[in-house]
Image 1 (cartoon, rainbow, N blue to C red):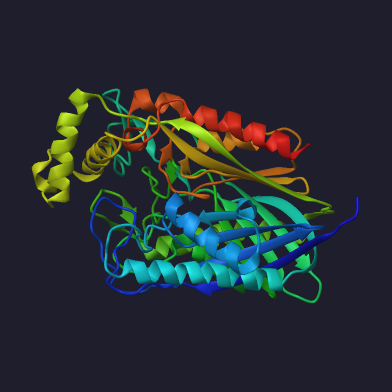
Image 2 (cartoon, rainbow, N blue to C red; image 1 turned 30 degrees about the vertical axis):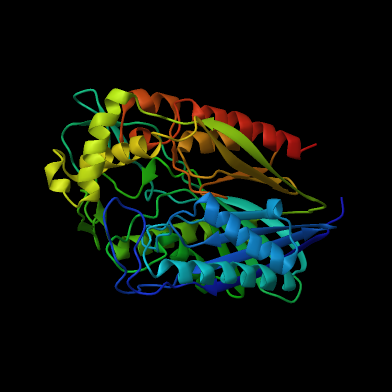
Length: 447
């Protein structure tokens, strides 16, 4: 096997105008300041005649219609076909919203499309011969299951710190941090970091890339002559909230409107821990030759989670109250209010929708390392299932890739309840189908 890999890197600032809506909650937030810069980061990889673009944007999640616009801008500028563009959002909850009809949106979205094309062009122009190293570290005690079984037999998402009715978490976390290192001739080394957790740590109304953007900057500051790109993993049922904290765990945090503790300082702490996982393995990666790049994008039919006529009566009532700013008339508080509002919105949204969604699932192989892109927020169980694909050195399942179409809970979550399953637009069994389709895609990439 001969190594023929080339790698290129670029990034660009995409801070939005103040006054734009912030995405991430069923609550209006308007941007009134900037804590740290939002960016688009691009990694171009080439082997022989195949080039792929890995694009990461500091955003809560980009819907498929905007993905189409951004990929078209890249293809027009570079000639790279759209299936070769792996476009993911980091899932920061303190970035701008798309699709809320704010007058500032149109100009900003056009600006982001141009920035995507800029970053793609610059990353391709930056291609240089490279060798790839791979390794795995651990980021302990910053990611926690956010769904819990309660004493009354129900399941609740974010039930509150030290809630005496908590029985046990439902599931477990994946603390693995996968690191790919691209050493280039006469150029900075590029570090790709993969870790799964919800970037809903900062809160408030100021722009921030949360722990993913901080991690990129900390890696670059900690290791001379490096550039960093980060991809979030299967984070749909995990976040930063430790419901059984030790002394000191809640330093730099405040109790937010929905009962979750948040804080800019805690996002910084998480970024330092993930960066520490990178430092665990950076000097001891296993270098491997890369003689090929393969990619595919499959469209899969996914069944819609539509409500019954009886359920729609209450759903319309709650949805109308929420849209009128009358959440105080809905008989729930904190996270349960968010849950019933999200559930009602899902039922109303799908009332006249098709019975199936056509969703893109992307696979990319760099030598014997595989990426699997999921257009939404997969549960940890999906990530673990995909990582078990046979024959690969590492498999990196990536959330919010080529779309942001909702949660993908495991099948038993629909019986248990909780925010994710009640708000998901997809029927029970979807997560298991994603694992099945993912394993097929990854198997095809090995041929």
